[in-house]
Image (cartoon, rainbow over all chains, first blue to last red; front, side, top):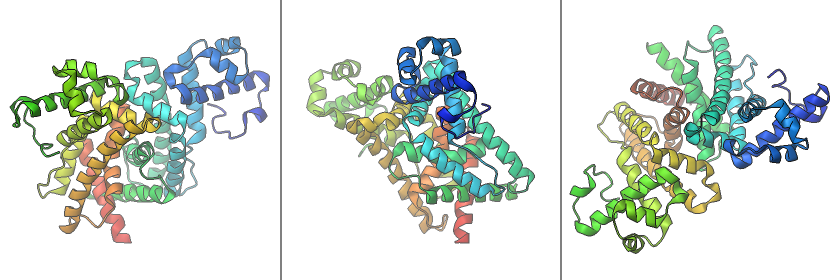
Length: 202
Length: 202
């Protein structure tokens, strides 16, 4: 995930031909997951979409599971970024808005759907778990900094992250109301106030 | 939904033979939705499972969509009940625990999965929307009573319900940590404290 935070288009990324081929394959994998779900990836279709030889795919990723995990992790790291501007509230609001946009794509829906039905397929379950684990790590790091700075009382990062992020999932999957900036602000404000208030009582 | 809150087993419900046949068909529909998803229901398989003639199914529900909606609404009303004991916190905690148990069933997973992928099929989308609308109505009624009693500041019932219920969905679908009573209490306490605290600031 060394270049995971880069937002440059694939063509201008450094690393020469091999790196560009790998990136084209990873991008195409994300697209195909959105079309057919995590379990439906076929290497011949993938090679065609990426414009590479099928042997390039097999050489780089002999295991389909490794390819899907790596592609989704790269996609997740690039799409929902939790920065540290020193203003926790602002950073969380931006993160939620990014997350809503990511979830509301074919790939986002495929990952969420796989999370629900993936229990039957351990490979799919592992890829989904890796994406969630990465998101949790990002949240844990930002929460630890906030606690050190006194912006937040000590809080379990898993609980805090789920409380904050799950309304985004539900708004997007229901499609009844849009997850707007106003909703992101309201969720963040209620969760931050609630966490501070309940920790004061303990 | 006249008998929606009844918890009696189907066999002992009043209403005679026709009512019992209808209930057996509705129960079997819920089971089959859990097995094959909302779009996979077949009347011949359904009749066999319910132990009725296929003609009984067609006579009662000429439209598959109506049958699926009615079965899911009955199931939703029976499974996650939001009672009014006069103690809002307690009622919400019990509701969240019930909801977690309902979502963590084959039928619960099928409905959630359909919510994500149902956008392509308007009939499926309508059935899912009906279940969500019913849950929202239950929440709206309880919230209105709580606001009248001064247990809660005026709050948008949709926002309040989503904030409270979405962690249940995420905990259950991820399967990383169980949604325990302790988590239900923590979610309820943070959300109630946050709603009260942010409304005070306005």
